[in-house]
Image (cartoon, rainbow, N blue to C red; front, side, top):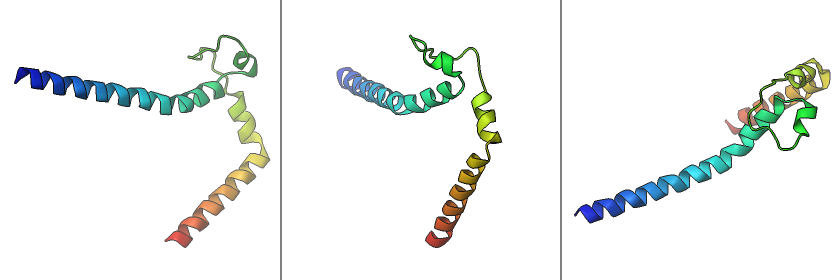
Length: 89
């Protein structure tokens, strides 16, 4: 009986380890996109890349929010999403 419990425990452990690897594989691009958005352009081109940003640069976000073109695109996206939601309902 102990052997069966050991095999089941081992099988569950391997299943959870595989799921963890798959989850990291799916979430890593989201993490990398966020980290690179917080770095300056000069830091992005350095090799090897920095996995954790120490010098946070928010100038990209400031530039986007100051741009009137971005706000137009954001408004258009909101209108299309709201219209599609109303039609779907």
